[in-house]
Length: 274
Image (cartoon, rainbow, N blue to C red):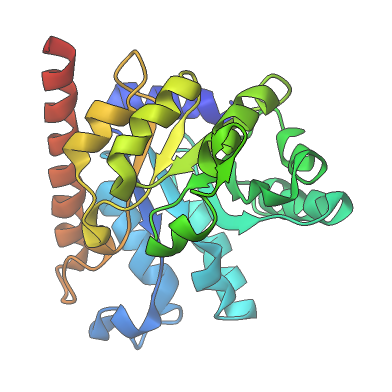
C-alpha cells in the first residue's frame, strides 16, 4: 500500500489529521524508565500503543536517534516495528545531496528502515530530489516554508516567480507528475499556507509547529486544507510526548493527542459548513 493510500485510510478511519512526532530526548524521559534495557524504545512504544488509534501518521526524527549512535539505530528499528502497518511513517531527516548520495539516503529510508515517506531538502534541485521520488509508493515531503524563525533568511527571498518558498511549491507540483511528493509548511506561517495551497491544491502538507511552537490549529485547517477538508498531517511532538514526566506519561500523551484531534475535527466541521 502506498503512503497516500495509508494516509487516506488512516484519516478516514480515525477522523484524524494528527501526526505525532517521535523525538526522544533522553533528558526528558520519565525517570522510572531509566532502569530498562532501552528507555527510548520503551518510552516511545508506550506512547505509540496509547495513541495509535488517534493518529494519521507518526514522524520519527532521525536526529534524536542518530545522536545515540548504534544504540539509537536499534531503538529506531524497534520503534518502527511497533507502529501498526496501517499507520504511515514519515522519516524526518531533511536529507539531500548529489544524486548518487541522495539515492543512498533514499535506500536507507525506504529499503533499510521501511518507512513510507521522508522529508527532503529541495535546495540542490531536480537531480538530487529525483532518487526519493523513484519510490512510487513513498512520498518526498519537500521543505517549503518551515516553522523555525530563521526560515525567513532564505525561504522568503525574492525571485522572479515570487518568494523562494512559492517557487519550491511550484516545483513540487511539477515534480509530482513523475513521483509522489508533498510540502512541509509550518503552522507558524498560517497565512502563507493558503498561498501554498492555491499553488499546490492536490499535494499533502506536513505541518509542524502546533503545540510547543504555538501554531494555531484552527488557522491551519482554514488556510491549509485541500478541497476535501483534508490533505494535512498536523504534527505535534513535544506537546504530546512530554505531556507528563511521570508514570502516567502514556495516558497524558493520549489525552494531548486526542485534544488536538478533537480541535482539528471541530475546525474541519466549521470550515465545511461555512
